Image (cartoon, rainbow, N blue to C red; front, side, top):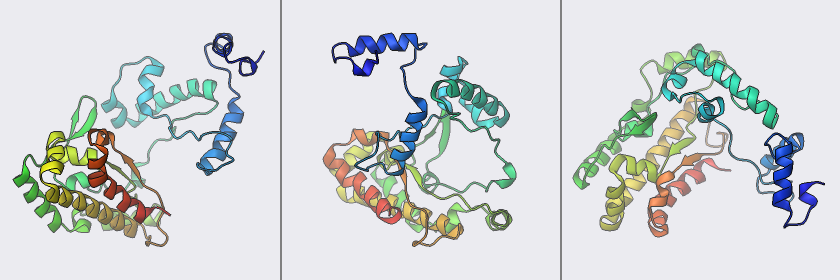
Length: 280
């Protein structure tokens, strides 16, 4: 008996029995799942897609639990040979379970890598520090006066001159000859998470409530500098506003710390401005 053909009351027990008989894994037609996923992800909001598209993909953070090893993010991120060994071991497990090797098995080629460009955090003078196995931003303004002075400095910065390293033109010429375009700017922490990193969690909340004009300036400056970074890096890659690749992603955990009204005031205009510029 297929568990999905039984009555609703019997379904949990039938599924548990089928899972136990399948070595602890719920029975699934893996090949059909991936075929349906391909159709669904091509048209995520289509009315006739066979399933809800799976948006999440596995990343290296899953390796320690799956392989039963001690978590060591710094080692993984800074030792490509070691990381490759772990990826292959993880993929051996993944392939047996889901039918795909989910993590990359290619070593990065340092000769095909652009020199790092500065980020939005650099523009806002927020220093990145490695703490508890992850990168965090330190505050660069702690009160209203410091925030005003910071925004004054940010407004004066020429984004192109500020974010591109001194050897950029030389490396760009070399890499473009190899067919390697500069990386685009299409992902950002925030806007609320970023703003709270720069100015502090409680500080931003009280800023929106008590100093809405300054909060609006902070918001608009973040958006303006984001758009400038995207424009500069698109131009460096040879794109125009008419043919630049579409799409943008945000990771904004701290948006949950604002009320809907506060988010509509501070976070939403940044998303709206970015999506209007980089979405179809």
